[in-house]
Image (cartoon, rainbow, N blue to C red; front, side, top):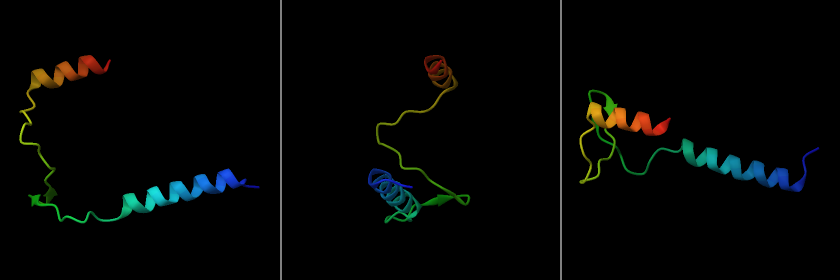
Length: 59
């Protein structure tokens, strides 16, 4: 039988799930049928060297 704390946890999880399933308020642009992700003005180019460095750091 669920306890009071379990029911509270279920409500929190349900709220998070509902929030995640809602469409964003701002319409996103698309390119070739795929959504275009937002980009910071300071974002750099992902080079193969940068990707390899990030892979190495993740290990």
